[in-house]
Length: 392
Ligand code: PEP
Ligand code: CA
Image 1 (cartoon, helix red, strand yellow):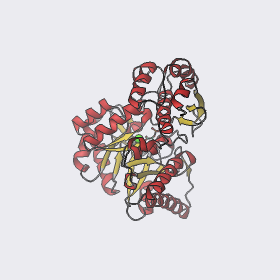
Image 2 (cartoon, protein in one colour; image 1 turned 180 degrees about the vertical axis):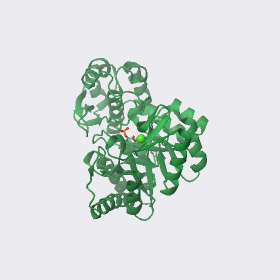
Image 3 (cartoon, helix red, strand yellow; image 1 turned 90 degrees about the vertical axis):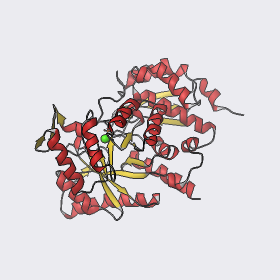
Image 4 (cartoon, protein in one colour; image 1 turned 135 degrees about the vertical axis):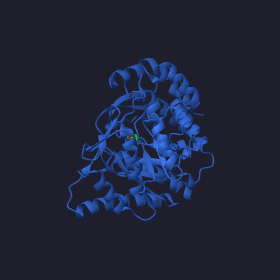
């Protein structure tokens, strides 16, 4: 029988420099144009993330072609693959960067699925059900580093509480369209930011007020404060406010309460394990206090967070840590401690849909995404296909 794994050994795997949704350079890996993987990149990047390409994408691609790919077998057990990959790419993928390591890690998984004539999610989830489809946290109004407007909050997100996945998608789209309508009614000019979220020059109050007004039924709001971007030398510079940590925490609490936020990401800066714990203590029973830059999908940082009770949610981005096995280790640890994993796109995206597949494969309850632009809606469409397959 034709075995793709053997063919792959005869050097059919290639990597290329391509461009992401921001026209920044990134990496694509393919097996003979049959199986593909592409890597995203962030702009609101945590200090402790694996760098994307330490010496630039051209050098990373050359390094992969010459020093990594010839020494690897593809289509093998994922943990074994990722451990060989890390040996070749340097500890924590320091020589290659995450663009190369993540595409090769994904390519291995996709070749395994191809060999077994399965979808990626079926490799992990042996008894998949419609109920395994994630809730969506859709980025709808943008600010911060992705937008460069008056609003320091990076993202205002919405999540539908409906049981049915297709209704959740419809609710998310309705929310987006009613924000557009409410802005049009007020004759406020708007555009789209890096992630396809609505960008207008309102401050945080105007933005959250519009969001509150535009919610469908059974719908809740979330926020990614991405507070690293407005923190400097012990102070938070939020719009025209300058606050020390104590004052700032009171302010964040008032925003959470006033806008009934259900999901709150990186409200405090990336080393503030203890300050984050104060918010978990106050709101953790009803709300998700989530760490992104705080954890950077890193198991050691998650352990620190568990020790301090710093969060009850964690953003999962494979390229923050460099390969899928290390990503899964973090998801498994989080779940075992009752911390909600939220798998997420990056602001610089491609049409790679692996995070959608992993959401169902690893039974991750939330996918953070936008509902606009091809590179974002491709993940939602992939989930819609899975939903249809599982509904038969
Ligand atoms: C985020 O901060 O959650 C995000 C998706 O942005 P970026 O990819 O720029 O880190
Ligand atoms: Ca974030």
